[in-house]
Structure formats: C-alpha cells, structure tokens
Length: 355
Ligand SMILES: [Zn+2]
Image (cartoon, rainbow, N blue to C red; front, side, top):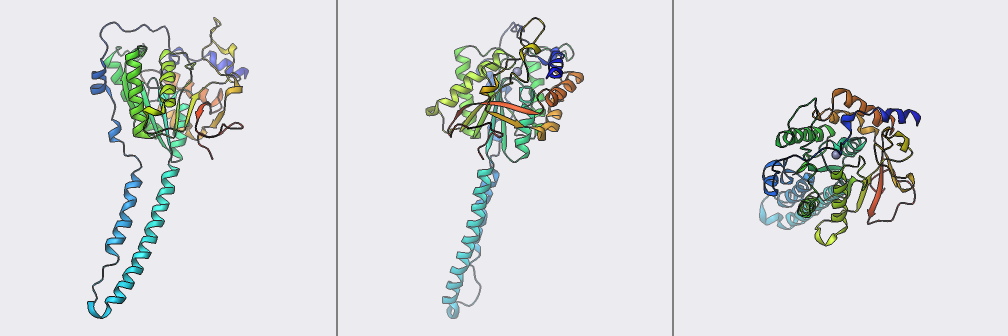
C-alpha cells in the first residue's frame, strides 16, 4: 500500500484532469453544429445483433424448398404429401433448433454502455481493461463520449484548443475504441467544460436516451458523483446518466443496472493526494463498493488504447499509466451499484452481469 502511495504521488501532471483550465474565449459550437459536424459514426451505422436477422433464413428456406418434389404426380400424390409433411416437420424442427440456439446466443450477447465525459476517460485507470475484457467475452460493448475535450491542451502536443483539438481527440477516441475491440464510439460533441446550463444538460439527456433506445444496454457504467478526478464534466455526466436511467417513462428500452466507477479508499488513501493536502483523486469508502472485477484479460488492449491518446499523454506518461493500473489497482476495477432491477447483491460481485 505504501508503494502504491509513492506511485500515485509520482503520477504525471499531464494525466490529471486540470480543474483550473479556463474556458475558451470566443464562440462555442451551437447544438445544431454539434449534431451535424462533430459526431463520430452515428448509431445508425451500428449493426446490432446481426445474427438475429440471419437466423430467419434457414427456416424460410426449409419451408419453401425442402418439400419440393419432381416425381410423377398421380400415383404418388398421397405419399408425396406424406413425405412432404414429414420433411416439413423435420425442417421446422431443425429450424426451431437453430432458432432456439440463436435466441440463446442473443441472450448471451448482453450489452454494456459506458458513458464518459471526455476521450481518454474510457481507458482511464482500469476502465479500458474492463471494456476490453467484456468485448473479448462476446458482450456487445459501446461507449458514449459527451465532449471532445476541446480545451485539454498540452504543451507536448501543441494543438490549439477548440475545433482542431476536438477533431484530433475524436480520432484518438476512434483509435481507442478499435484498440479495445469495442463498438465504434458514439461522440455527442458537446464542448469541454460547457455542460452546466439547463439547455445543454437537457440536450445531453435527450442524446443519451436516444443512445439507450438504439444500443439497448443491459448495464450502464459511468463516473461516480465524485467525478474521480473531481472534473466538473465527470460530475455532470454522472448526474445526467443517473437522471436518464431512473426516468423510465421517457425510455423505450430500460437498462437493468447502473454502476458508478469508484476508487476505493484502501487503494488510494487520503495521504496519497497532492502535497498541499488536496486529494488527487476522490474515493469511495470500501463499504459502499459492491463490485470488484478482475480485468487483467483486458490489460493488453487497454495498453494499446492508451497509446491512441497522443494529445493527452507523453509516451512516458502512457507507460506510467499502464504500470499504475497493474500495480496500484492490481488490474481490478471497482464499481458501486447505484440502481438495479434485480435483487441487491448479498456479497461482493465479481461481474457486471448476474450469473
Ligand atoms: Zn475526463
């Protein structure tokens, strides 16, 4: 634990979300522009559960083709009908088996949606490893990213704040999702640190409802109310995601579980904060942590994903981040179950999905 503390103190400044960033002067994109210009490939391009549409074909083919018979008609009409019926029954039976198998497959391919404030939040600490692990296991994994981090300027990347940096980070987000092996990222394109008006928050909620209705997640994960690093965009993302989840009347699809990502106090104790006494990361007491998931299987993909975020991390910072995930958190991802349709877990869960 002591070594973990030392490692945290040495976390590069570029890895921290700097709350002191000042908003950009000048115009910000209006909502119409965000919808039209800054979104990554839209939901409409996602092919959800393609196996479902393919499954209808065997049954159809069997019914139309298998009972066709070219034998003389009069003498064998009766037996033809009998054989036809027999083949039809067998055909239906086979088709049913395939269909049942398909239904079982569809049920297995449950869906996770991660809702994050900025490009790179999807891979921060153990989150990327968690998403990659579920994608590897055959789950359908999606992420929705609220802003494009347009003011996350770094001296080493030297990309001007605004549209240019937003475009660079949108490409980094695309690269990251690909590296994690998850579905293409859905980017809402809101402006960095400009979420705190009623109009923007309502629009964020509208877009998230649209995503939920399209993607149909069983489980949603997002930032905790603490925002992990305390970033205002992380906190707003928690508020809106929680609001949307709890208001079923406005949703056509109802996700079953909502989780918050948390850092446990025992892993990141108060003393590991900045030298002026502030905490570098906000934490949750271990008592409230419901879920601890071993995400080692996703480590390699998460390492690759980190390397996409070149505008935010130097190569050295990326290596530090990879090491901290594996040492300070032991590649375990900690979550707090916020709401669920099912029974409350009696002990610590080790999966996002009920067995
Ligand atoms: Zn962030």
